[in-house]
Image 1: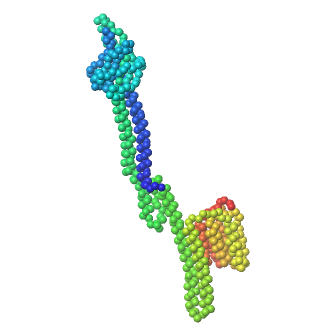
Image 2: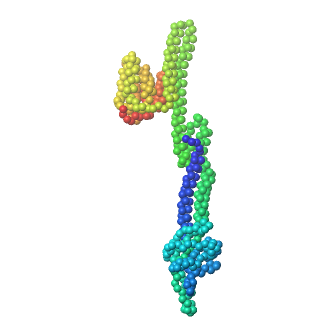
Image 3: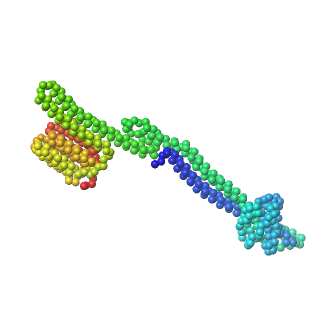
Length: 463
């Protein structure tokens, strides 16, 4: 994934979206404006045709011309950009033309056909300039009033004439170019203005994220306090996930401290026994038999310490290997295996085992660690059981799944404790339970030993 800041990408995306939208908007505005300009230009041509037709007059002796005044319609005067040309509709002889054409020394060819319906077309002047023209045929008006004609005894014949009126196309093109320039400038100016505003406002809007980042940066590795809730809606999911992470880290740290405390307690006990045995042997330096007995006791203690160290290494390797994939594990099979493995020790003490639970009860767990925990608890039950008695193991699936193990179950049950005064090895059992994310409760009262495991991950599907 390429680098870059969220603020930078946000600015680029917003400016790009504004640029696209402004281009579309101003393109539509240009099309609308162009249509209006075209309509206005066409309307101006029609107005020119009507204005010239209104002053196209017929006089006695068949004299027909455009009665234009020097100060009227200046665009048709010399050096103007508007033109007209007049023909007799019957003889097709030229009758009149505008001073602007006279100044150019140019005449338009008579279009054909020409009718009372205005006809629109384009042409060019000799110098290449484009001209838009309208041709129309109409009846010239009389130049004298009827009473004047009666008084003077003159007559005026009706004349059909053909009129050609034109305007320079450059007038329309210039307006269209100006409109296009204004629209293009607007399409570019708005995104630039938005970019300038975003450059000021986006950092302000991103400030809650920046503050959260600085708070994370300033924290030390041991600070797992939850982050304060944010009032910004977009930041709230980040704070929620960070607090969930802090809770998980706090849980891991707590389990690590428990692990270290249990390991230290379990290792301190055999070391203290070794130290005490050595002190007793030193009190009797001339007693060889006492020394042999002390050495045997020390060897037994070191063996137990070695088994403890092996268990700790096993747990440490389990933690380094990363998250374990939990498997549906049938409780009956593992419990039976643990009891069968301890059969020689059970026979030696004439113990009877009673197993109670559903055959299909299962739990989501690491089978290796769960078997190690069961082996530990079965061994403790055998060690504490009175010879010739019964040991009961009950289990159930569902949520939560559990396993309970006790000996001398016919007597009154003891209150479950934390295992603070239990025999050697139960601290390791607590470590196994921590690794399984399970809750282990153990207690001992005299010869009665009770243990109960409650699992956090239930297996709802039957195997």
